[in-house]
Length: 244
Image (cartoon, rainbow, N blue to C red; front, side):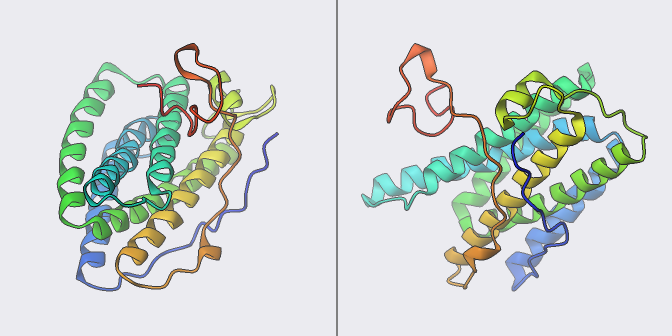
């Protein structure tokens, strides 16, 4: 079984300035709406929220790519980092689709939320990449809290600890007898890593210090599958980047 990294579930970046406070207030407002709409239906909650979570990495990678082309400069590895984040969040979504089986209403909600959030986040990133990354950092703090609550429901027996979907077992390199609890532990560790990476990126863009040792470890993933029958190698690169 893949090793589950330890997660600091209480890690929080204290806002330092008006833009940080706005980012935190925006995040808490969305958390309030999610709490009222989904209550304790954590699997269904994950489907909608992971649709949102998969947007920032793709937007950030696109904007960074275009900026580097305009300025003819290196990206410092951020394009691949953000693309990997987007792919990872998409895999979370695909996993919870297998777990929760979304209704027609929830699928329609996913479409609407995705477009609204994509356009809004794209505009925010164009105006202030630092604030955009801070928003994501706070989003991920809430994600860690949500998955911690999900685990508590599983441990209390209020949510069935069924078998892990085959897709999740392959992605996180889990054993055949892995359960939903094992999957949620891996997802929570992923979110903790994205939390710290985005807070660190926001600090770097603002010229603030951020200790790299604070970044939560990233769980191991299966090697990327080659796209369109191509052989795996240097061209395959980051997981799934050729697939679209």
